[in-house]
Length: 481
Image (cartoon, rainbow, N blue to C red; front, side):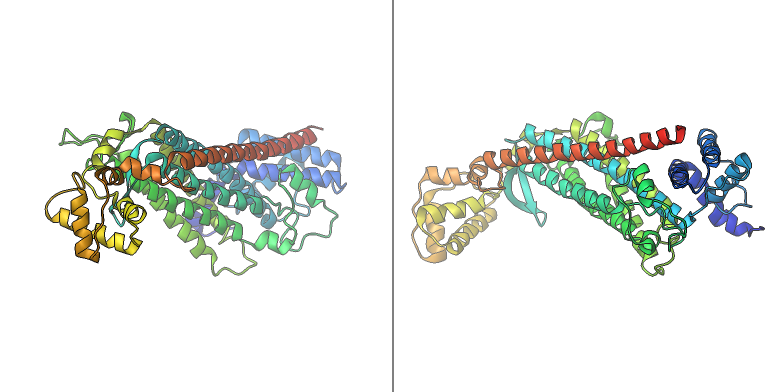
């Protein structure tokens, strides 16, 4: 068939190049499993099955040939190679490109998602390692880009680990839904031959069969779900990266990146630019654009068409996966070798009013004020001291009493020792011992829970990979026999 040169250049040749680079192993797995099933069901002879399997093994060893415009895609190129090598052997019985490509996409996504889960667990491990080292390191928490309250580095980092854990959970749930075999659906109505879909699913390591054949070849929700997981992860990690960049800034200096992750200025000798972190942020932003394109490409495609929402999206999604995997690996190594600087954070906390909440709470506990009144008294104290260029240092009982009289017309007497304790950042953190707070006991509990969750996640990943590996061994053994 003569093909339009522009169509070849724009669509067919690039798609073939991607298939040769990324899809050949998956396609050969599918064709091998299908051939073994045909033989098991006595739909082809042992001789034909052996010839097909031998030709497929040869293609796997040698690789596919260069693109030939006479053939539409890799599927037909392999068919031609098998036919030339075997004569009359035919693997296309009860098989369509529709169920083949739907199966291939799910195999690719399964490997990609499993790899991302493993990478995210490594990132969680690096975050938790830093958290365990810095359970006593005070840092400044911000809201609305303003000083908020003291907390600990461990409290922040266990929060980061928790949100990454939820991203892992989303990927794992998506994995459970996409780990179903479409093979045997054929074009969309299955076949008149007595095939065994459960057998091919088992040979490919799937956890089950995607039951409805129309659904098997037409649905694209698994693609959108993976893209959605990518988008949530990219948004989550970019927020954490933005905080780390702020920590590494000279105004705080609370995070020092290892020398291998910084760049110097071409003109300013003092610079330690955290460029590796900036590259991670850039990659995550780029990924969000790909994820938006996935949903835009699939949203108005008829339910019977599969190319737009699945086949055409494999190249950009595979590229996005690689970029995301690289960003996660870079962030993991960067965090593992970074140094959180307690003395810089202590300096950042000094001279702030970040302990104002505890001072107000103390007036409630020690002086019997309603919190609204205590809040108003402390607000007046803070505003007056700011105008005079002071912080909380040296705050006296008389000053607190005067602010109370001026604000709520009530005298308040608290000791100097009580005030000193209330404005101490370390006391602030120690008082917050409620479940989930930054005090030592709840943080230790959160760390223990996070470690247990991480271990369970790694075990689930190992088990799924072992199941896939066992299926590959069964497939290879059956082919040899």
